[in-house]
Every structure is written in structure tokens, then in C-alpha cells.
Length: 247
Image (tube, rainbow, N blue to C red; front, side, top):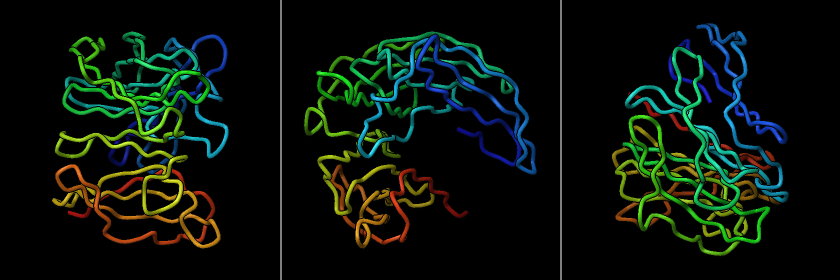
């Protein structure tokens, strides 16, 4: 997780399997070089199994926000918790650790004081869900009534949760149930330069002979509509997706 701009900071969630989970911070210079600032304990516990053993991995396990000050949200997949960390010029101050509202949190999405958590439940007998929280000025998470919802199946091996640019819809990619045009939808991102809410999704096995691809969609009134794709990248298992619009 990196801040925008030519220089700034880079943050790494370590997913510690024992003791306390932690985040390592680096200072980033304009030429891209990194200098270690240190590692901060954030509470909670990491996990490997919670991220899924088949088609493993997720996007959005550590996210950075800038409204009401700079803040990190991190999943503690092994203890079913979310850590909230305040950021001051690259230096981290843990604010609190809170229940994720489900089992095995793997992905987060934030907008205007609202945080949504994707609980994959990959290493649990519980069912996967999304859970919503209001974040107050101190960084405390408050569950939102009616904002915890199941996914399309009890254990669909989901990869990412994402709030759309309008703030009205919540999207989740599910790798096992494959509710998409491309195969094994993984990471996704909206095109920030498009007024039409264009969404690009990485298909981990959507190309020829199971190679990777990307598919473009449009979100219209809550309906996901195909623009084009899957467009093969002729590589293996593309997972993470980042978009950057032109001015």
C-alpha cells in the first residue's frame, strides 16, 4: 500500500501468524528508493488459510484513507478482527482492534466514514459475508444495522469488496462461483477518469487455455453490464488490478 505522488510512504501488512499482527513502513523518495522506518504491532493475528488455499489471495487487505486525517485499516484474518492505525508522516499509531463482523476478513473498502469488510470464512465453518461499519473521528468502528449480508454462496472464495464511485453500491468478486464473463474474477478497480462507472476486473483464468485476462464492465443503476472482454494478457493468473485515469 503506497501513498500517491512522487515521494511518500509505503506500508506492508505482514500477516503475522503468531504474536501480534504488524505493519512495516518505508519512506519513499522521488526516485522510488525505499528507506525502512520500522515495524509497528497493530494487534490481532494473521492467517494463511483464511485467504484460501486454492486460487489464494485477495485485494484490499490493507487500505489507506485521507479524510479526517490519514488512517490505515488492516485485516487480522486469523483473529476475525480489523486493526485501525493512525498515520503521521509515515509513523504509525494503533488506534484500536475491532471485530470484523464475520470470519476470516480478507478485503476492505472505505468511503466517507463507512468501512465495509469482506469476511471470506475460508478457514471456518461459518458462511462468508460483508459487514458494514461507521468509523468515528477517533477511528472506532461501529456496526451498521442491516449492513451485514451473506454472499451468493456460503464459501465462494471471494477476493475483494469495493464501494462504487457513487457510494450507492457494493461489489464483491467470487472466485469459486464465477459470477462473471471472465473466469475466476479476482481484483477489480473503477476507472477514475470515466463518468460512466467503468469497472475493470482481472480474470485469473479468463484467457486461452486458462491463461489470464481482463474484462471491462459498466455499472448502471446497480446492474453490471459487459463492455468488452475477456481480453487475454497471455500470462498466468493475474490477480491485482489498479487503474489510473488520464486528465
